[in-house]
Image (cartoon, rainbow, N blue to C red; front, top):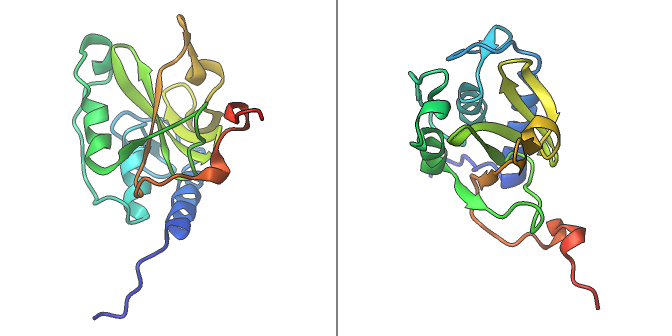
Length: 173
């Protein structure tokens, strides 16, 4: 036995949110993965979750800039599902710090944001670089048809988080 303790879920989540925050305000650069120099919405996930020890240091590149506009293949979603599992999101439950919001842009799920404290997220976007945003408002939360489709993923075992049930969904006695 090595005597090395595995980090707790709480410390892992704190490590992810601290690492994600440290990337703000890195400029946007397609395929970029250098803090302070350039990053895109796929590579920030790799760098943040690998730095926190949640996933191995993988490299999903190359990927075309606008593949989500021309193809329906769920490439981005496929990478996320290799390591994370879907969880309930609003209005049924709130994602926790370090969980992932995956948004549909174009023909498939092709943009992500790391949850800091829902709805506060960190993501890398072509028009603003790595930035804080509100995950359920503005262009993240809405598209031309109304509410933008979003899925939530976690990297920890599924469990019921009673304390995080959304107040709007509580039943009235």
